[in-house]
Length: 337
Image: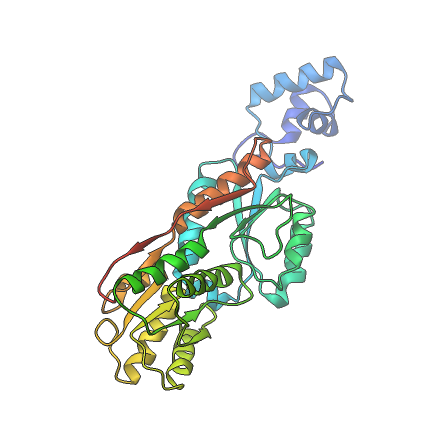
């Protein structure tokens, strides 16, 4: 086996020469093989100490079948990943924990057309485990990854299996609390711009909205999918307004979609925070950049990223790990509602 030294350090050939053995014997000693005589073992170890030889980690991992690498898988289009501040917080939290470990992190933005390539890479022994930061009901290739390496999901998988590990926020309760906030301020003519119906977060936030509206004896005046994008939020808002309904409040299932909704409302002469109360979801950087600043439901994305990484490291170390971790949400009151 080829064992590349750290730059500037002794080479494997120098160790072999000092120990008076072959290069392959040094390789076997470094990789823990027992097919070495006691005398040769002692000579190689002494030479390694004398020369301060340090084998390349990647080469040694081939023998141990450990790569000391994990994959962060983002099953989204590139523009969506870089355009949504939610992902920045998640990645930052994961990076904090992985940075303090012996692992390195490889990031894969695996859109639909790249799923086969991502699957081949992850199943090829290049990583010890994976973190999936977002997923849709159509992302069936992720289950095939989980059959080969340990996987921790960000958010509840669309189809939860007993062996799955995930870290989620309570999206149903978040949707309920957002709606309850609007109701507590006397609003009754309420619509919602919902998230993607093929994502558990979108499904759960809409469920929370509907449950709270039903408990108040009210029907939504509009429910339109904004696909968790700014453009989608604007289009969904326009579809609601095109029905001619007169709203006094709006729940938008992400801050990014709320920015799009602001634009659509203003194009119709409706001023957020004055003519209509608006509440978002995320408490991302978008919420404070908007005017008026957006009342929103805070989800602890940074903490979620930290938990995801910690659970995976526990699994890889053979330590007990919770299969399901749920994090709370809270309403953050600002000027829009």
